[in-house]
Image 1 (tube, rainbow, N blue to C red):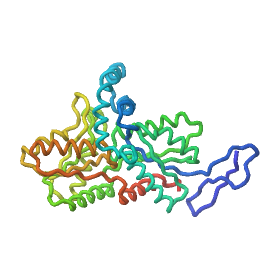
Image 2 (image 1 turned 90 degrees about the vertical axis):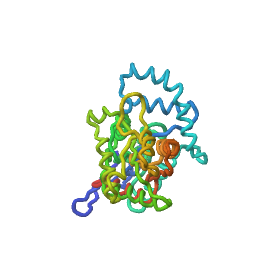
Image 3 (image 1 turned 120 degrees about the vertical axis):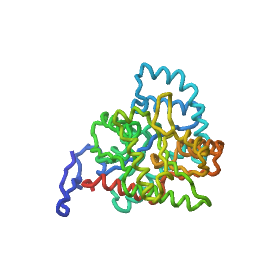
Image 4 (image 1 turned 45 degrees about the vertical axis):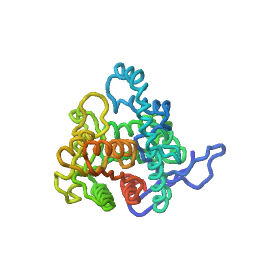
Length: 360
């Protein structure tokens, strides 16, 4: 093994570093020790064709954190019924938003950009840090990226699941996959995980600023701001998942930061799947009812996502817009996610720096 020395730093600071002395004959090359930061997003298919969509949906809908029905009941239904039809409809949704220049989904494009911009910021302040990105479902996979980071010398890695509000089907499953990969590694890096930041004043301010900036670009003011979050079955709430409460707190804090009255801002939930009851009010039903109540101008933002994806670009900005106008609405605007805006990347850097305290 290589020699190790302790480098003295100012009081309270010590770092272990490899000595510069020679390695024994025949010893494999030892990479320089590095700190890693891994951004994790939900996932994306490799294409919008049937088989790409089927592979992606099979992985996604087979996750016990997402669909927790018994496998003997769920898998035959999924593999023999759902996955014969759903890849076609989901494929059309992805095709409508596909980044044709790069031949990939916007989620992959923007997540890569987020990681590259974050890496550039760290290169200026902490050159010994590696920033990478992975998807819980699809590619690049979490196990593959963790192996790559470890091979590059990352023996301390901060996992950052990009979900401001914690939920078992999002945050927990992302870390589950990472821990599952760690179980197969002979030399396991030290791991830290980013927790929810749904009420972080910096995050709340970024959301409020994005609303203010966007509304300044249109010539009308919304009568309602819908804050639409990805839904989960209602029983998740009753079994202890804090997601519902965190969503409502985010909405309340953003409304207070904007200085708006309570009735002007609404929380709703989208993307329900299956026949059981999910968190309400439902986004699509809300859009249908509002014009009947005299609300004809709405703005929509989706704080559960920090990166635009099929749920925002297609489900909200395309389907939601169509449904609202068809129901009698007059004006609809979608406020994009924080994406790779410089202010968002600066915030991600702050979160990362807080997670790696003591390592740097």
